[in-house]
Length: 84
Image (cartoon, rainbow, N blue to C red):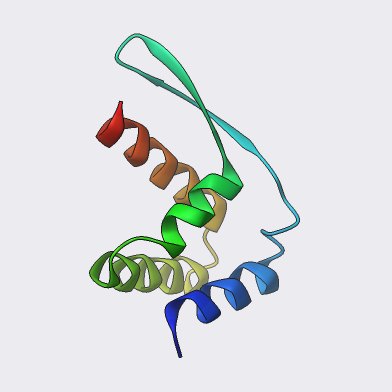
């Protein structure tokens, strides 16, 4: 199954698509606001290798009944640290 289809299904099943949130990330003396839908779009458009790792991590978190939303926030933090 293609990643984007799998990811869309995963997000829908977990009810994350309905949950819009703005993450507040402090980095390098600045405060960045990153919306959850932006992170979801970044995930859909990253490399195949990165998508594979994200999928593995999401499946592991879900299997252990962890909070997937925490991982989405972590990815938002990574985005800010990489680009700002």
